[in-house]
Image 1: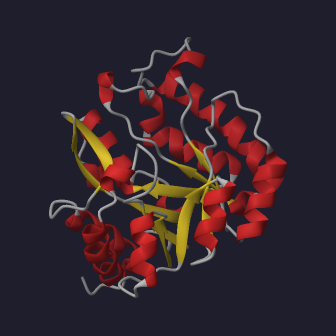
Image 2: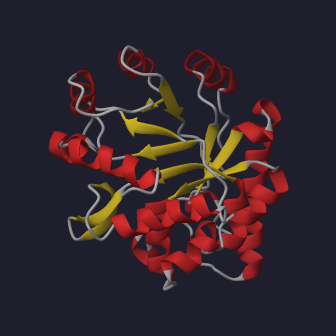
Image 3: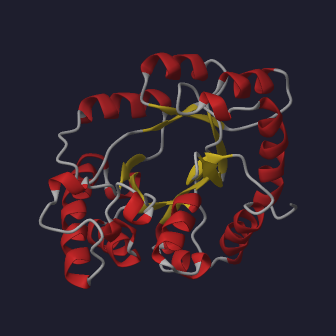
Length: 268
């Protein structure tokens, strides 16, 4: 398992000072940022692709960045906008609506698989926040996620915090909910903390003492063989720009990166 970390100036400084070690920097598909990060570590590109969003991706640019960085997977978010699927209520969870959304997402994921090969495409679960959020409930249903993976042959990117948020909104036990996901096809795992931001639940926060037991449980399931062993584990704390620069504390990174590395090998 390779450890990737969101690129941030704070992370770069810690790495150069020898205070943390990582395998890759995780970056959005921004050429200038990729060039900056690649000076320090290999880069893992995380693309903004969305299944069911009516997009026409620039496959050639995606392929060029993937080859340039040797990024192992092309990621696709299972994130159809409700505004494009008005025939399905955003809070619909009945099997017929879930199946319809799953079919539409699978159509887009299949296009990525056709270009890059199913083994090189991963689909990521997005968070469902309930009535207060902008995500469709159907995309959080494990049946929909399993269908996309089974139908296309792609692999799965488990965002642990997204799954915990979805389980909470759906009124389900988080661990039981996660176990319903297609973890036999797990290829990538994302880790962040969960907290409150302006009175609402949010991820990409520092890992609290309440988060660490869930992280440790996930790696126990991997070591036991119950889940497939992911190739990439990404710690998504920190970053650049207005969305992330307020949560890129060097002290947090200096403490959490080695702690996560210890948990990954069962010593934390």
